[in-house]
Length: 212
Ligand SMILES: Cc1cc2nc3c(=O)[nH]c(=O)nc-3n(C[C@H](O)[C@H](O)[C@H](O)COP(=O)(O)O)c2cc1C
Image (cartoon, rainbow, N blue to C red):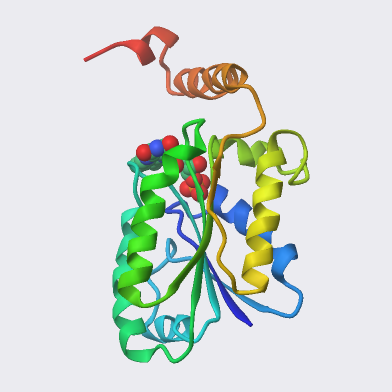
């Protein structure tokens, strides 16, 4: 089967969405042809939109932006909808891997609903989604195998997703937080990210808390 791996992060490099796609790859690569698309670097060409209409499955990885879908990905979906309506000849299944900045992966539920509604409009099948909370942790956990430590929930969800992609079936979507205490995550984010970033920009801790 031909599978499109679409990175819907606006980041040109080092995106958490890219990390999720790379983690999924070994679980679905046998017997399938995977093609990567990075619409953040440049808009897709008409030939690429037509190519997407000939895929057996679309895997879309993206970050949660203001409880929704980043605008450049939204534009891609709106354009793809028109191509699908005129060029699609076979059944297409859509799978999603959403990640968000807040701890709770449950926050991805609105973006998930948006994607499901889009599938109905575009005439494709919604297969399954996973939604990882505290997504910015992924970059520092690249040496941790999925299914272990803080990535225990992610590993389980990814195996479920990979199984459904392989058999082109549907499954319940899984939105989850990392296997890491919330207070420890907040502590690490405050000290190693926010305070460090403030210092780099010549600001003090109290400047971050100042209200306008
Ligand atoms: C403009 C903008 C809006 C965002 N909105 C949300 C949000 O509503 N909820 C949330 O939990 N995280 C939000 N985030 C955080 C991203 O979802 C998070 O940093 C994610 O890990 C980025 O993934 P990526 O590396 O794949 O782009 C937002 C980030 C940006 C830059």
